[in-house]
Image 1 (spheres, rainbow, N blue to C red):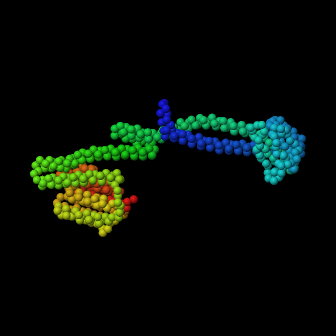
Image 2 (cartoon, rainbow, N blue to C red):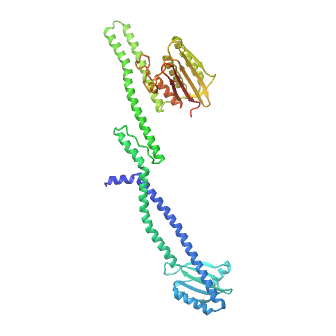
Image 3 (cartoon, one colour):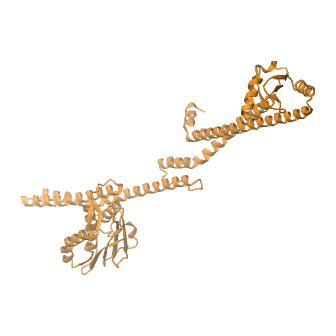
Length: 469
């Protein structure tokens, strides 16, 4: 493995997660061991204390008849059997005067009997303590308790056996711990790799897509809710990008058609005028035609920019309180002369006031585009109905006509840029009106739906929230 691959390996999230899993496991195991160790040590001490109390009960039975010699013989046998460095005995009267003691050379300086008798008298219960034995690594447990009403006995026993048991326990735990750490690291690595397999698959798919394989998608598998969400979001993003790319191709084709006509017209007019123009009026007519075509081109470009800004969320919104009923009435008044010229009737139904928060200019443009579309495709003698209504926290604008309608094959595409149901393009327009209307509605967090059949008219329904969040 090269040094570069090694460095990359140590930087991977899988490696870091493995360290985290292993570290947490080791720390938690050590904490658990510490708790078990302390509980075991305490249990061993308690067991030694019980043994000491039991030994004193046995010694009190030996002394029941005041047989001091038998008691001293028992002391000596215990010391000889276990060893002077393992056990010791001291016998005091109630004032702390020493009556008998075994060899204490191995035990160093012990608390004098007077002090022990005084402490026992104050506390009134057996005195347990842990002491350090000189020149040895082991400690000892001592007990001071009454043997009779007139005698106190101090009994000390080395904790070598208990400490040896704990040492073996620590040694075994350490050996097991080393093995378990290796298993934990391996399990952590497998868990991390398994958890990140979905991310790795997304990465591989993204790399294939970057190389031109645009049909590649991440398979949705049962790899955990988060990974499924990531895969779904990634696939949706790629679908969206592919849709935008297809839209760009479509827009490019339509631009080529829609821009070519006015440019060709301007060039033809200019060329004809230059070749045949004889007076100033011909050149003025050419200039007027050029201005007219330029205005058309500028209008088309501005509409495209407005749509792009609205779809990208970059459009500046000047939010204010709007009376939707008033805006629709004003729009109907503006379009009334055009409707009368085409022998169309506008039927408006709106409440006296219907407030909404939004961008006034954009709402006006939305309504104008929808009314213009209805007027354009409704034959003479037709009717266009406009209704404004309020439902809870929504405001609804319905524009319905009894015109030529929309073919079901065209219906899914009418909000696409430059798409025109009139494929012959005999009608005026650029195919951007409904796209802009849809973009404006989306910018206001609303919905624009259309219901139509060929030859049966169309109904556009705009649903806007009362307040923008």
